[in-house]
Image (tube, rainbow, N blue to C red; front, side, top):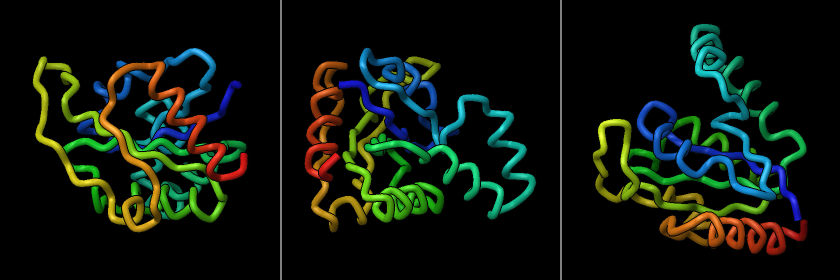
Length: 148
């Protein structure tokens, strides 16, 4: 089944890692906060908190699952937590996927970051990224667990 999925991640640090797995068959992926163009993020940042939250809320529209890609510095980031809170309030399925072991633009891997506390406390599953097929299965499991 095709899913519209919200991808949550630390944009500056992990965009290269996420782009390696973004285009998965049968999953319509959204970039961080639902945008694909970094200029939109930069414009929203200049306008402040309300603009960033509006961008996130817009990106979450019509999604059924939120994938929180966990890199070295993801946990406890302000907007990651906002995305998780909004996903919970929308009753999205949620799954955390560690990506620290994927290479960045310079070919470097990173250290494992903590799973965001709201994911661990909420009983949502967390995995280490292995392949597209597994990610698709985890997304489908998260959707079913949320009744979607």
